[in-house]
Length: 208
Image (cartoon, rainbow, N blue to C red; front, side, top):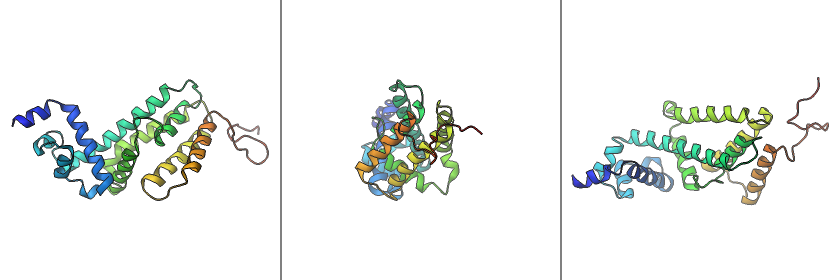
């Protein structure tokens, strides 16, 4: 009993400890092996301490999704706050947060997020927080002081890189990946934009 009181008194710290343990299990063993017992063992927390924060596996999964959403939002804010150029700032922040260029995002977090998202694809109601986050970021991107079509192309190209890697569908050469990311970042500054074949930059509206 004393052990559980000590654990619960640390509230958020213990909760984060459990989330990190669950993340490691999902990456190393898969979502199916993420049982409450295994998470408690990995986190070195008593079963009672875990149940205080997450009374069921469903509650743990919902908590992990919320945790992933918060971590990505924090990474976006970090990237945005460190960017002095207001034009394209939110789009650049999205690219950087999605491709692990902020300290809040790790390869393990991305892999766990991808595995959990794929596993919950048949339970769309559990992914509402992710969908809401996507809508919120898209609204920021289209209001980012660059052409909203260009900004959206950059956003979905970034999503494609993330999904390909974290759903383990494909991986591109690291050097090529770095060049692609640099090109996407450059486009947010309107540098090196492609044209439409007749000399018009794709981000510029054409005269009728």
